Length: 205
Image 1 (spheres, one colour):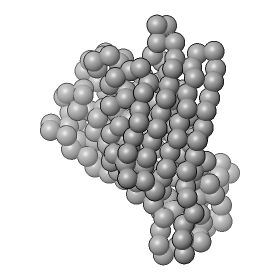
Image 2 (cartoon, rainbow, N blue to C red; image 1 turned 120 degrees about the vertical axis):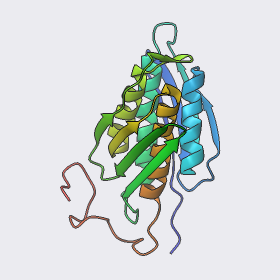
Image 3 (cartoon, rainbow, N blue to C red; image 1 turned 60 degrees about the vertical axis):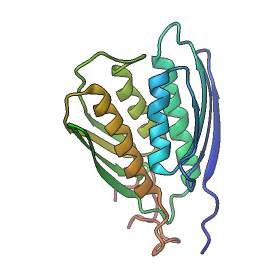
């Protein structure tokens, strides 16, 4: 059975940001990212490359005021695009996990693409900033992405010292876990991966 194209384009305009996102789940990991925050762009590029999801992000925000709006809203729109591309979520593997080392750092990420959003964030940084980005904004992005993407998402930095390595391992771990979770299951392409028969906010299994 041929799986139909799983793609989405979402645009969101507010008084604080203008964001356009395009994704293709069954891609090659190609990306075109521009948010005005260099380090953030680098993390989203890692997400695309290691998940093999094609991602295009164009974001313009009130960066003279704060990075918070741009980072959070990008997570919102990217999560919405993911959810739209997944559709009914029939035939996906649903679960994914990754254990990612980066030099002295080790991070574990686990996903349930259940359409019941929840974030567990067990990550601490030694520095308040990484290059041009405040480290406190990373949790906000993961929170927004998991909520709008319909993901139960657990991110745990098991150990590490370098803040750059810690957050990059989080994004790479997310990418690898996401790649596994959204991949079509060739043995169950017409099946909802739940005994409930549906994946949604009221589905408990």
